[in-house]
Length: 378
Ligand code: PLP
Image (cartoon, rainbow, N blue to C red):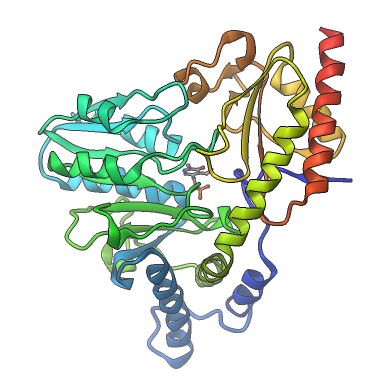
């Protein structure tokens, strides 16, 4: 038996998304900027996907900009908005941001901006109070992720956005891990910029989008042609965009049932491992993306744990928990204050829409057996 429990890393391509892509990988290969009919047909497919995604998020098609993925969308948001704001000031990011935001913000330090990290609490939450303590009226941008990629922790984005807007700051949220489960309506919030990625919702890899609220200042970070209304140069990837559109269409029909089933599967897994001592759960199930389970386990190391799980057919990961070169524990778990006794044995399971109770049972039983085996060796 094999169980894929690493959906936070990436999801399998839905067959319907693949079907939507195929025409643009073969017969309809034409450049969407061409004026002849075949080029215009490809353009129409891109615009259909854009309209679909805009409809799902509650914005105008003209506010969706396709990118090469979540990383580029977040880079464009952070670098593009701050550089075009026309003033030097403070950039605030959450303590648990993905490197797509963290490293982009770090690059701004060299350009004269001061980057401040808003601390999280013991559960990895960035509270509106913590943001309020750090924000100043010269804050140009606040960037706080909607859901964390290691623990699944969901942030109070509406309230955080209101704090940012009160101080005249632009608000960006990296919603890459939130898109698959959270109800996201930019028309009901003041979010200025929102990054999403296709491959976390059963669409193809290498495709994402940035929502840019009309009127938000943004400068391109890639120079070239006039694609994506001069904001993102480069020939579009029509197949990937069509696959992303289809994945969003499926999500729109299935989000609630996916959430329900992933929540039940994760709970089943948690019940099964409850009897094993020395396990801390970094993903309180009521507060995280359904299906996410980050664990820190005393008396074991992440690497052998994952290798033995893998050898038994369970594909899980450290999240971004360890940097393979340095074997440093995750900065996210450190920021949350996970104790030294447990942090080196951190592992992330992330269940998806096609996992079953049998998968949860097998993964949980295998995990407890592997923990017992490693503890005996240590
Ligand atoms: N932001 C978060 C929270 C993520 O989890 C990821 C991917 O793991 C990204 C950004 C980057 O997205 P992509 O892989 O599409 O570049």
